[in-house]
Image (tube, rainbow, N blue to C red):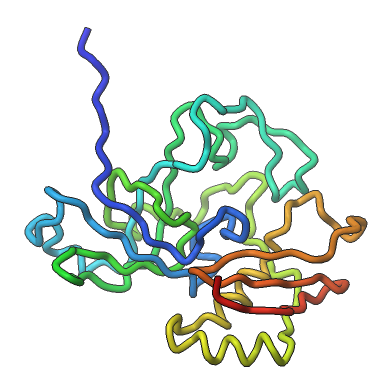
Length: 236
């Protein structure tokens, strides 16, 4: 019997999401969520990527590296079902899998080199910073988009459920920080509109104050009914 193959990452993700809290639950939901995929040697040859620039989107095959090994679960509580109803693991995209492999389709915003390193610019990501990537494949609309496919309990895309407002301090901070991170305010709005709180935290939850990190920026926010108030935005 032949031994099982050993998979070696071809690249590493440098993402705006430095922690799991706040990452959108599917790719494409936060268009301004950006990342750079740094290709590692010996795969960082231009020849291996010739022609990829003609595709607008790619599939990224990656590892859920922040989930401890051996923590797979036969059933999970999907956020789309309110976090209260269990379904089978293989009916979901949960990261708690026997083999913690994920797939995301993201926009390919560019290919180039920076300080000699081959990098792919990505948009609409749902990837944690430092995610190891096993492979990439071009997205083919005629094969990968199936108009009459059934989506089970997630048949429709989630709709933004919260409005977002900024305090004067947080608004001024975003203006200054956007010199380093263009589009930061739009990213904050898109992430918070999608309500990153755990699904069980509905209007009955007494907790209203939260924080998350985008790039090296801490975002402090509070929920007031159906409005998120961004209270402070500051670098670590």
